[in-house]
Amino acid sequence: MKNAFEVRNLNFWYGNFKALENITLDIQANRITAFIGPSGCGKSTFLRCLNRMNDIIEGSKLEGEVYLFGDNIYGNSVDVAELRRRVGMIFQQPNPFPMSIYDNVAYGPRIHGVKNKDELDEIVKRSLERAALWKEVKDKLNQSALSLSGGQQQRLCFARLLAVDPEVILMDEPCSAIDPTSTQKIEDLMYELKESYTIIIVTHNMQQAARVSDFTAFMLAEENKSATIIEYGSTESIFTNPKDKRTENYITGRFG
Amino acid sequence: MRKGFHEELKELKKDVVELGRVVRRSIAEALKAVEEGNLDLASQVMKNDDLIDQKVLAIEEHGIGLVARQAPVARDLRLLHSILFIGTHLERMGDLAFNIARAVKYLAKKPEKGNELMEILREMGRNTLNVVDRGIEAFEKNDLKIAEELPQLDEPIDKMFKEFFKLLAQKSTEEHSLDWASNMVLICRWLERIADHAVDIGERVTYLVTGEMVELD
Image 1 (cartoon, chains in turn purple, red):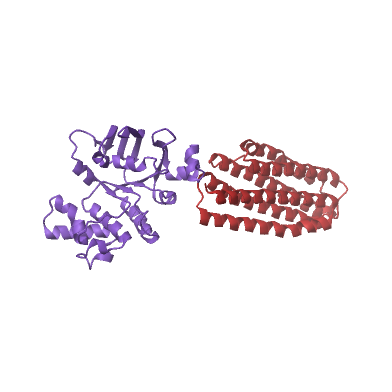
Image 2 (cartoon, each protein chain N blue to C red):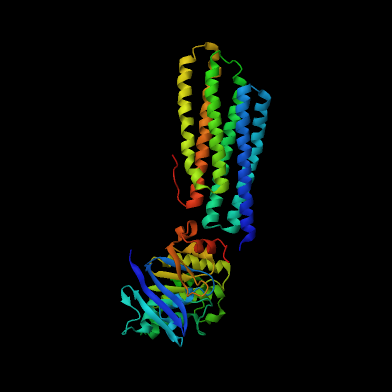
């Protein structure tokens, strides 16, 4: 099985605060991997290390290596914009641009130099189809993206991301601001997409992790310690027979 | 803390242990009825089986409700799984006790040389009740060690069953005792099955404690 990411001895600081301690793990390609753990356990921080979203935070520092299909993403010659095309991200709050549905999806390809109208039309249609949104919006592509419901907006963000042909999709709490039906659609979508993409999801919803993911990493920041990965394995083994007492206590709700 | 859920799970486990004790009593009373040829006691055991079935159904319904409402995982999931399976095993054991009780009325014509056979049956009964007790105890205490001992306790029962059969073949020349003999064989067979179910309870306990599915034998 191919690894999308190979993370080696990763440590991360916000100023003097050490947020992540010595993380080493492999993330399989074409699988869904979930990061779970209580608030403040570093899962979003770790997720953002995977496409260098933390670079923009002043005073942050990272040590260790992160390889994306063999390329060290913290290497000197890395084009960060290109990295973020390869490793796209979906956030908690749907964040479409204040422009038309069509322009939202065409935005990325245009930036990457696609000018031909037919080609753009094709990318927009294909991306919206893959994001399971095409049927709902095909007759109103020129309407503002902000006129869509929250769940539709989140799928539009998927379409916008798919339009630039990424390899990995990072999802930070993608369903916590949308209704159950939309959540179901996003989960179905993840299942469809994992054939072609590697998906990594941070979720507070343990049942969502259990439902959608193939692998689960449990993260925890113990008292006076930096956050790290406590246990990592197949989702089935984590949710039926976790090896670490701390994992067990967390997922069964016996925490604290 | 999911306090309510964990309390409920604990209660449900208690219900299963309690049911185990009820089933155990049924088996013991069925055996007593056999020994004494006591038809009243036998009919009590048979009546009691309805109660056991109702309790098993209630446990099952409660368990399914917990799955639907609480989405249990890890140890909670394994406990619930064990509860439901052990409930089923106990229900079967209860059915077998019912069968034994029902056979009492066919045992009236005891042959002259029946005592020796009856002695083996008594010994089998004692051993079977012991395996059942230990199986229930293993579950009650989450005791892996007891669970792993169960096959050993079951072994003599299988041997006694064979011994009983051999002895019977030698002695069953008396025409009129055929009914008696065949029912005694069945009772032995049912006891042996009861003990097997108790060993299966041990397998569930092993899974509950370790997360590993094993075949204890």
